[in-house]
Length: 202
Image (cartoon, rainbow, N blue to C red; front, side, top):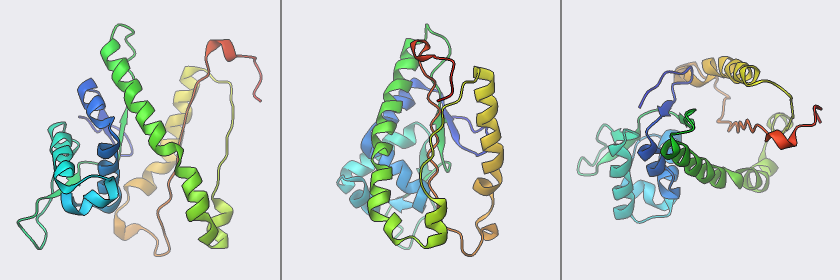
């Protein structure tokens, strides 16, 4: 595992680690730990839809790939607490066409993540948006854009976005504004197939 990006995300390159993470319970565990901090298997179980013993098994599996680790003990030192190794993770399909194992593993993990995040906007619109203050409601929502760019230009766009985000993502908790709140940013870059090209931007 490496962390060589502005946001401090773990970069997953091992196909076995990708396949290990491509499981709804494990993704839920990692998301819960990244969002709320250290927890025991018993505390995690209701949120991830598994029993404490099954959750503990998945935690040990994640630990084997360096995605979670032991946290500082809580008040009850008999309860093993876990924490995420980093605030986020990322992965890429290998560029080498011959690396079918890596490409297949990345595809499986991508599909599982798309499934997991696909319903998030609907749940947000039904459960959260109606209760937002006007200032937050005005800024929230969805925008979709199609642009014709080269691979190098898309890389530059991604880098520019991360340069803007990095100071907010990596700052200490003490530096956050008193009226700040968590905001989920869903960022998709979905290049079209060659057969879809028309030359336009609409």
